[in-house]
Length: 248
Image 1 (tube, rainbow, N blue to C red):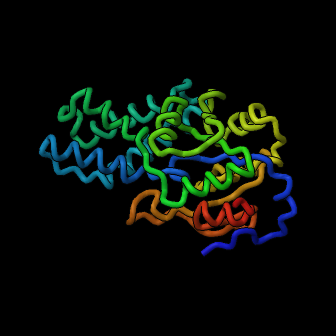
Image 2: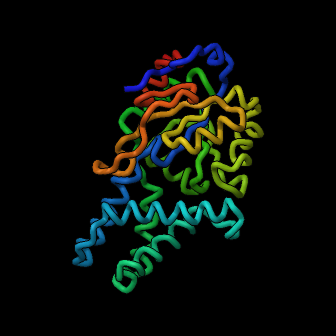
């Protein structure tokens, strides 16, 4: 669907490290969280539409995340943001008295048990042989460690926005990759399936690779997976990315 490098790519020789978004880009969050919700339905005899609730939960999380970035809310860890959003969601749908505290905790923990997309693990192993590869995610450190271990993602390093006490697209998060990896922004390729993330990385001076994830929000969603001429690279999956970067 997308061409790997539509513009002259002499800059590729300069790239030394690759930073990856995780939720949605490396790992599928929709199906694991959906399954956790369906399990609640079975155990509680409910008929809640968790396909809709997962999408709404993610949207509520994003609102609070943006409030933290803008300074309208004090710093909060992502797991706390997800939990607050879950409590709001349950109240809105009349479910707040149907779930115990432990069930809420277990449901919230589903965000740490994400599954890798089928193309990810092998392609990351290829890329790791040629580049330093790291996470650069809004997920918290504890959650990232759990996801990386559960999904068996072969990263050299784990970096979370939590280290900057901010969230993407704040520049301080991209600065983490520069500070901790020791490379200039132009030597780091940011990989994500979210264009807002890549726009901010580009403004910071990084190179950008967009990976289409049409199923990020489930089979009925229609996320923007179109190519953009301001992106350095647009691919359908990590295998194509590894091929484009000549990582064998």
